[in-house]
Image 1 (cartoon, rainbow, N blue to C red):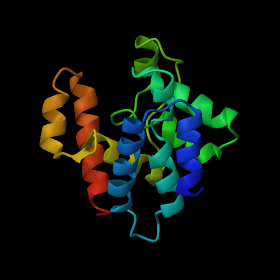
Image 2 (image 1 turned 60 degrees about the vertical axis):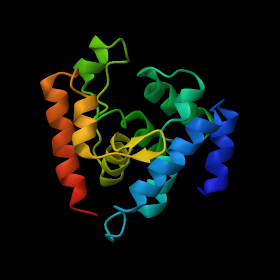
Image 3 (image 1 turned 90 degrees about the vertical axis):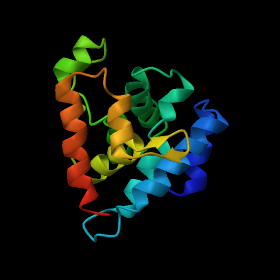
Length: 161
Protein backbone atom coordinates (compact mmCIF):
# COMPACT_ATOMS: atom_id res chain seq x y z
CA UNK A 1 0.00 0.00 0.00
CA UNK A 2 1.20 3.48 -0.78
CA UNK A 3 1.47 6.17 1.88
CA UNK A 4 -1.36 8.17 0.29
CA UNK A 5 -3.66 5.13 0.48
CA UNK A 6 -2.84 4.61 4.15
CA UNK A 7 -3.42 8.28 5.02
CA UNK A 8 -6.75 8.19 3.17
CA UNK A 9 -7.79 5.14 5.25
CA UNK A 10 -6.70 6.84 8.50
CA UNK A 11 -8.85 9.85 7.66
CA UNK A 12 -11.76 7.64 6.58
CA UNK A 13 -11.54 5.90 9.98
CA UNK A 14 -11.80 9.27 11.74
CA UNK A 15 -8.18 9.71 12.87
CA UNK A 16 -7.03 13.21 13.79
CA UNK A 17 -4.09 14.97 12.17
CA UNK A 18 -2.17 14.38 15.43
CA UNK A 19 -2.67 10.62 15.15
CA UNK A 20 -1.63 10.74 11.50
CA UNK A 21 1.54 12.69 12.40
CA UNK A 22 2.31 10.07 15.08
CA UNK A 23 1.80 7.25 12.57
CA UNK A 24 4.21 8.94 10.14
CA UNK A 25 6.81 9.30 12.91
CA UNK A 26 6.44 5.61 13.82
CA UNK A 27 6.79 4.72 10.13
CA UNK A 28 9.98 6.79 9.82
CA UNK A 29 11.54 5.09 12.85
CA UNK A 30 10.31 1.62 11.86
CA UNK A 31 11.96 1.92 8.45
CA UNK A 32 15.35 2.44 10.13
CA UNK A 33 15.09 -1.24 11.12
CA UNK A 34 14.25 -2.33 7.58
CA UNK A 35 17.61 -2.50 5.83
CA UNK A 36 17.97 -6.25 6.31
CA UNK A 37 16.72 -8.24 3.28
CA UNK A 38 14.67 -10.39 5.68
CA UNK A 39 12.42 -7.38 6.38
CA UNK A 40 9.45 -6.62 4.13
CA UNK A 41 9.84 -2.84 4.07
CA UNK A 42 6.52 -2.27 2.29
CA UNK A 43 4.70 -4.25 4.99
CA UNK A 44 6.53 -2.37 7.76
CA UNK A 45 5.65 0.96 6.16
CA UNK A 46 1.95 0.17 5.72
CA UNK A 47 1.67 -1.47 9.15
CA UNK A 48 3.36 1.47 10.86
CA UNK A 49 1.21 4.01 9.04
CA UNK A 50 -1.99 2.15 9.95
CA UNK A 51 -1.03 0.87 13.41
CA UNK A 52 -3.22 3.45 15.21
CA UNK A 53 -6.17 3.45 12.78
CA UNK A 54 -8.37 2.32 15.68
CA UNK A 55 -7.78 5.68 17.41
CA UNK A 56 -10.49 7.04 15.13
CA UNK A 57 -12.85 5.04 17.39
CA UNK A 58 -11.15 4.97 20.80
CA UNK A 59 -7.92 6.07 22.46
CA UNK A 60 -7.80 3.29 25.04
CA UNK A 61 -6.25 -0.19 24.69
CA UNK A 62 -9.17 -1.30 22.53
CA UNK A 63 -7.81 0.83 19.67
CA UNK A 64 -5.62 -2.07 18.50
CA UNK A 65 -8.52 -4.52 18.44
CA UNK A 66 -10.76 -1.92 16.77
CA UNK A 67 -8.00 -1.09 14.30
CA UNK A 68 -7.68 -4.69 13.19
CA UNK A 69 -11.43 -4.84 12.60
CA UNK A 70 -11.38 -1.55 10.69
CA UNK A 71 -8.54 -2.77 8.49
CA UNK A 72 -10.45 -5.97 7.67
CA UNK A 73 -13.64 -4.00 6.92
CA UNK A 74 -11.63 -1.82 4.51
CA UNK A 75 -10.20 -4.91 2.79
CA UNK A 76 -6.65 -4.30 4.02
CA UNK A 77 -4.24 -7.25 3.76
CA UNK A 78 -4.40 -9.58 6.77
CA UNK A 79 -0.66 -9.17 7.46
CA UNK A 80 -1.24 -5.43 8.00
CA UNK A 81 -4.33 -6.05 10.15
CA UNK A 82 -2.22 -8.38 12.32
CA UNK A 83 0.42 -5.66 12.80
CA UNK A 84 -2.33 -3.27 13.91
CA UNK A 85 -3.78 -5.79 16.40
CA UNK A 86 -0.42 -6.77 17.87
CA UNK A 87 1.32 -3.41 18.33
CA UNK A 88 0.35 -2.63 21.94
CA UNK A 89 3.51 -2.44 24.07
CA UNK A 90 5.24 -5.69 23.25
CA UNK A 91 1.93 -7.43 22.70
CA UNK A 92 -0.66 -8.96 24.97
CA UNK A 93 -1.28 -12.63 25.66
CA UNK A 94 -4.81 -14.03 25.37
CA UNK A 95 -5.05 -14.07 29.18
CA UNK A 96 -3.94 -10.43 29.41
CA UNK A 97 -6.47 -9.45 26.74
CA UNK A 98 -9.20 -11.22 28.67
CA UNK A 99 -8.25 -9.50 31.94
CA UNK A 100 -8.35 -6.14 30.13
CA UNK A 101 -11.82 -6.79 28.70
CA UNK A 102 -10.56 -7.42 25.17
CA UNK A 103 -11.30 -10.41 22.96
CA UNK A 104 -9.17 -13.20 24.48
CA UNK A 105 -6.74 -13.77 21.60
CA UNK A 106 -2.97 -13.88 21.41
CA UNK A 107 -1.82 -10.41 20.36
CA UNK A 108 1.92 -10.87 20.87
CA UNK A 109 3.90 -9.80 17.78
CA UNK A 110 5.14 -12.88 15.91
CA UNK A 111 6.60 -11.77 12.59
CA UNK A 112 9.63 -9.56 12.26
CA UNK A 113 7.47 -6.81 10.74
CA UNK A 114 4.99 -6.98 13.65
CA UNK A 115 7.87 -6.73 16.12
CA UNK A 116 9.47 -3.78 14.32
CA UNK A 117 6.25 -1.75 14.32
CA UNK A 118 5.49 -2.53 17.98
CA UNK A 119 9.02 -1.54 19.00
CA UNK A 120 9.01 1.64 16.92
CA UNK A 121 5.64 2.62 18.43
CA UNK A 122 7.12 2.06 21.91
CA UNK A 123 9.84 4.59 21.08
CA UNK A 124 7.65 7.35 19.64
CA UNK A 125 5.77 9.65 22.03
CA UNK A 126 3.59 11.90 19.87
CA UNK A 127 6.05 12.63 17.08
CA UNK A 128 9.19 12.58 19.26
CA UNK A 129 11.54 9.59 19.39
CA UNK A 130 12.32 8.66 23.01
CA UNK A 131 14.88 6.31 24.53
CA UNK A 132 14.08 2.81 25.73
CA UNK A 133 14.88 4.00 29.25
CA UNK A 134 12.26 6.76 28.97
CA UNK A 135 9.75 4.23 27.61
CA UNK A 136 10.39 1.91 30.56
CA UNK A 137 10.01 4.80 33.03
CA UNK A 138 6.64 5.60 31.44
CA UNK A 139 5.71 1.89 31.78
CA UNK A 140 6.54 1.54 35.47
CA UNK A 141 2.88 0.84 36.37
CA UNK A 142 2.74 -2.14 33.99
CA UNK A 143 3.17 -5.64 35.39
CA UNK A 144 6.80 -6.81 35.50
CA UNK A 145 6.12 -9.47 32.86
CA UNK A 146 4.98 -6.85 30.35
CA UNK A 147 7.97 -4.58 31.06
CA UNK A 148 10.30 -7.54 30.54
CA UNK A 149 8.56 -8.31 27.25
CA UNK A 150 9.16 -4.72 26.11
CA UNK A 151 12.88 -5.12 26.93
CA UNK A 152 13.17 -8.44 25.09
CA UNK A 153 11.40 -6.98 22.06
CA UNK A 154 13.80 -4.01 22.06
CA UNK A 155 16.84 -6.30 22.27
CA UNK A 156 15.61 -8.37 19.35
CA UNK A 157 14.60 -5.51 17.07
CA UNK A 158 17.61 -3.28 17.81
CA UNK A 159 19.77 -5.91 16.08
CA UNK A 160 18.21 -4.74 12.80
CA UNK A 161 19.11 -1.05 13.13
